[in-house]
Image (cartoon, rainbow, N blue to C red):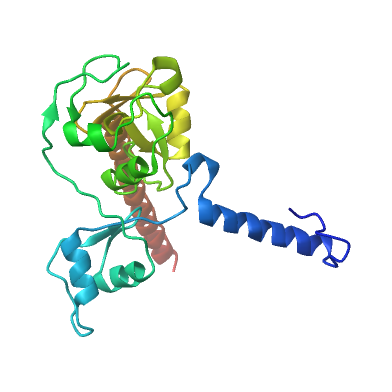
Length: 253
């Protein structure tokens, strides 16, 4: 891409390389990375329809919207003014959700073990073994389900890769929504090194364990608690040392 275009191309080598980087970035923004299968780079804002409608319709002097605040993936809640600004130039993807979907006890083709699947999802979003990679609608649904954040406990990365919980090649797993999860590149790599295990419970939930089958959330919570206790001890020790040094300084003066 940085090669001279023709005999009349008078750009220097540096100018051609800069233009090549710009062209690559443009192509990526338009079509996404190969690993994202056509899903463009984006930041995700998750909000319900009422909150979005109220934010777009509110008067300039209003300061609050009486709905559940929108969530910017990887950041947290955002106010109606920022939501309105982002929505002004954003693609809006309506996603219908239900806390207790009707379930079907039927087994999917080529699936190992029993699994309960939402009847609506099996008709609209699931593709079984006919396709290896998640469809664009499935990717958007997974991102919305996880609110744009990696599903691994304790991870807050927002660039997600879609992983088959029942591995496609080794275990013959289907490309179905309830058996796929969004992971960041680091956590996805850890899974394929068999250092992180994931099991689907059949109703959109996933259980994470380490290589010793210990629940990952419990281990993460214990590490977090130990880190906080150590940080508290260090703060107390630092305060004691400061007071001691101040007393010694006062005695000398």
